[in-house]
Image (cartoon, rainbow, N blue to C red):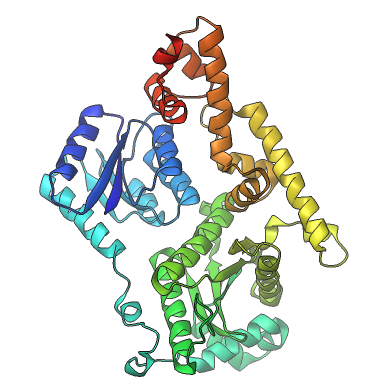
Amino acid sequence: MYNILVVDDEPLICKGLSSLLASSGLDVGHIYTALSGFEALDCIRMEDIDLLVTDIQMGAMSGIELMQHAKLAKPWVQTIVISAHETFQYAQMAVRLGAKDYLIKPLNSEQFLDSVRNVLLKMGKPSPELATFTPGMGEYFRLEEPLPEYSELLNLLLLDSTSVLSNQSSLEKLDTLGLQGPFFSIIKIKAPLTVDATNKKYSARDGLLLRYAVLNIAKELLDQEWKSIAFYSPDEEISVIIQWDEQSYAETAAGQINRLDILGRSLHFNIHKYLHVNCVVGISQILKGISFMDVLNRQASKAILWNEEHSDYYVFYYGDFNWNNYTADPSAEELHTRSNLIVQKAKEYIEENYTQKGLTIHEVAKKNHVSPNYLSYLFKKNTGFNLWEYVIKLRMEESRELILNTDLRRYEISEKVGYESPEHFSKIFKKYYGISPSDLKK
């Protein structure tokens, strides 16, 4: 069963859509509602949400901003956008962020339910190619190698960019593939293609089939919103070249690293969901110029090596560690020291700013010059707290002190600890302490 979050700053619309979903006969578990983007984001962080249905224009945080933060928190959450305006710019931004539909108010009930039904159906099914994959059934599956002659050329480009770019014939083939950039990044996917989760060996045929399935998942995700090329590389890896032209890179330049992190986690999530293997994903920085392709390749490979230090983590961005501070690759001790420093600085920043309305994990990560997901992982590993759980812990402890030791009203306390609405504050408080603020006061 699927959990759905409905977000609209008009309570009647939230109530109406919730009632419609509850009586629809769809495979729906819990239906949550939120009256603002901040309230919705708390719900996404704290609950297991599968589908987000959000209005696009809402007070301090728009539906577009909510989608951006939701993707950072849980890239696999699907979204349907509703709007009172048939504005191309809004629709375009929503689609770029992966929205599955864009519906115009006033909503037609059947159209809305059809949209939800279509999204839920696709969420539960892999592509036809992946549905065919079952270990031991490889002989019934027809493998098609993805342009082997181009794979060879692209792998050479990743190893020795200069020699490829100095060959006119190779340049013409790269033009045929549409590899023009000028901005590039490399993602490498390494999956355990010889043994399954129980350490049982795959047959050679099943190993090839699994690799083919990993490539298909990568292509399916990439085709949605990326200009990219995915291909087989040596050492049982899949390589992906991501490219941007000047205009598309400039439009959201500040958020491209976050988008790559979201893509990396989506790759890991879907490969694990459909193939039941934990792949490791390495992501390079973004550089301008095809001549840096070998540099980007080395970065992605180096990022993958972090899995040796963090074996319970699977998506690594090269820029999360300042390699330039070391003459050689950092030792395990140096990595550990660096990790502790990142967590300590994050704790200090949160303790100074937890009462700030609209505080986000992205903001904390930006202050530490690391990706939000890597910061969340380190924080949980070092402190035992999920990063946002720590923010809530500080807010709840402060609010409890204010309730017990002052005469401040609920809305004043809510304001002081960083919540937009007293109702949302009360909901979080009761979930945390098992008692409402008014009952505690009594």
